[in-house]
Image (cartoon, rainbow, N blue to C red; front, side, top):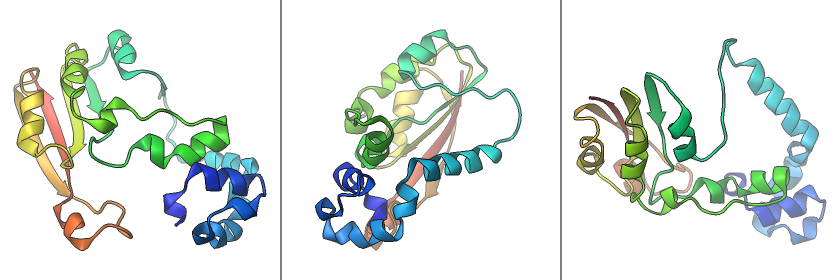
Length: 185
């Protein structure tokens, strides 16, 4: 149940209003209540940051298309939200709500694959692409059909994976695949 957080329960638990927390999740919030404090989250962030190697890394939080218009590089890693799966915005709504006091609208990438050709077009100036996607909305041939008009030389691998292993069926997890594609001109 803690892996299935919802903003309403998390906000209520964070504010100490445990009467509003779903009875299915209340025990988990009580056991982990120390994890809901801002101090605990900052401590965890410090711990994660200590594991990052030194160097000149940069991180950006902005619209992918705007970013790709101005960035230059030799390799781009494209990992868009996977259409046909649970959206990042829904799964991480609890964090957005607790940290920012608001939730984000669902990305159009989460709803369909229609924006993928536009994303690949925006990457045209970068010579090498590494693309990851899953098979919920496209099979590997379908993904390659979207990539190859822009980058005809592709190498691809299929990687089986378990998604939400504790709640997904054995049959569903047997079909889940992640695709990794390296594409060049």
